[in-house]
Amino acid sequence: MNRLIVDGLGKRYRLGGGSDDGRLPALLRRWTPVVRRPSDDEEKPRDFWALKDVSFTVDPGTVLGVIGPNGAGKTTLLKILARVITPSEGRVVGSGRVVSLLELGAGFDPDLTAHDNIFLNAAMLGVPRATVAKRLDEILQFAEIDKFAEMPLKHYSSGMYLRLAFSAAINMDPSVLLADEILAVGDQAFQERCLDRVKQEAERGLTVLFVSHDMQAIVRVCNRTLWLNAGRIAHVGDSEETVAEYQNSVWDRGLNGGEHGRNANRFAVLHDVAIVTEDGREIRGVQTDQLSYLRMRFEMLENHLLARAAYDVRSRGQLLFRAADHQLRYFRHAGMWEAHMRLPAHFFNEMTYSVLPSLTVAREGEGRRQYVLLTEPLSFIVCAPDADAMEARRGEKSVCASGFLAPLFRWKFQWLGTREAGEQAQQAEGESDVTRA
Image 1 (tube, rainbow, N blue to C red):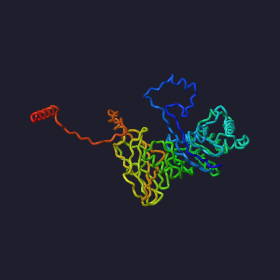
Image 2 (cartoon, rainbow, N blue to C red):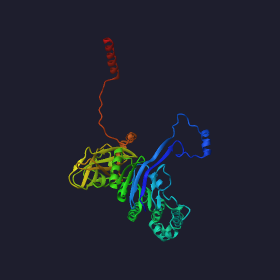
Image 3 (cartoon, one colour):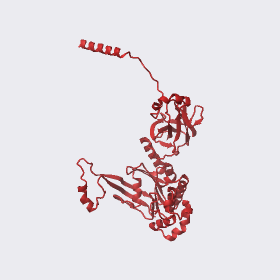
């Protein structure tokens, strides 16, 4: 297969003005002014570019990761390459069979069996029936549905749908495989098998465009990575470098929970986080009057590194605060390290919290920084000290449980005298002002 060339690609949508190409049916155009007359102050139609001036080249055998925030244009790019939608400008040059996994079970008939759907899918892709017949057993075995091959797909679970869709696609001799977060709904074991199979097929010349929010998978599988932002290319190049730049950008804007970061890079590995007591014992619950610590364990892979630890604390879907070390600390030696952050007593309320640890790492003398974070946060519960304390506070429970935090501040009260004394003093002050006037 020749190289896949994307040159000046752009996709425009018309917001508020109907179709982006203006080709409304004549009858609809005739009746639109009668049915709906826009007011003078109504927002005028405007152009929205989902993609703009996107150009890149993919050589055969390349697994190209496509990353970016939601709305960056990743799915639009894959839909254009799959010829689901047409671009507004630019062109795509290449040859070979393109197989897309843009939607779970797309192209399958739920009333047909898996056996029939495989042959139907192959016919739509132009694969000879004899070729499919030779690979039928392999497709069913890889999907782990050989026992259910004669069952209609409408009785399948989403996991069975996914396994069949991927197995059928990877065995249709594709030249280009387009995968849009399709592996996110599979179980961990199947995801590992799919990623390994993609790497094997790439070594045989398969070109893959892989969209994912899982940065760990992107770095592991992809030779190169394309970072899209607001429909334009922000960076394209080595996967490790591109993912690091992207995660730096995401971290600077604040984590939104949509990205699955990496717990390791070329500098450090973030192993685990735990709640521990003063004597180092791990616990899963903290009493409101108990002093405890957040313990982060990480491994430095090089000598002479700089690092700063941080924690994002959340509850009920809300980011409560981010606690970070005040400086980048110097680590002379590689190896395992621990970082402890003190959690004061009488600070958290009686509810469940989650903690996402992260580590900022940089080489000594370099300004460029990289981030690692755990993909799964630590959850812990805060409760009252004992039943007697709970009973004593029952009358004020509604006040104590009204917020995310319940810090015990120091209070100071000062007597200012009676109200009558205050009024007399104020009146005397007013009279003196009149006298002075």
